[in-house]
Image (cartoon, rainbow, N blue to C red):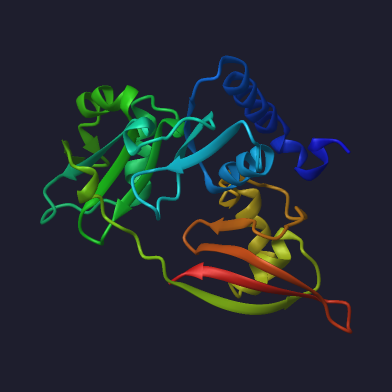
Length: 257
């Protein structure tokens, strides 16, 4: 049975990348540190590496609740430490009384200075303060060049790992029944939107599945897929529980509180 059968076609290039990392660790018998991975990519790494006797894998992005994490693949003899993940946290200093910034503004500012998304991790807030986690190799560049977010002038202050804001780990669960596992069908049910409104959202690049934009309303969702709709929030297909007598799907949805 081909390894690729377990993954969607668009995930095959990343599967190839993981196999290359695996070869490096086994052939050179040394650790391999990756860029920041989203949760779906982390799951792919876990499933490919599995319970390998000669190597192990660990993830870290600043704390145990981090969403985006760097991955360390290493020989079984190696004992990793947090410092091996080479991350640097910053807090944004800006005139909070006079301007308002949002997550999307910070994301856009980071991309505008030329950073690739895989080079920085979570953008965290407690409602007042904002922090960013970046790879050590681009920390100085980020500190020198990220001087504004939207209309706000900002500066970056390096902070200790212990000072990183911990996001909430509380979730709500919702049981829904849908006629199919199509993306547009599930979005319509979960977010209480008509199908006529959902299609333009999807075709306008406003919907992501597993942190990647999807423009096909008929895209078929699977268990553990994460769906986000801009301006509406995010949810996860926590479980697909089978079909009802009327041939509809019973699914459980998980969403942050």
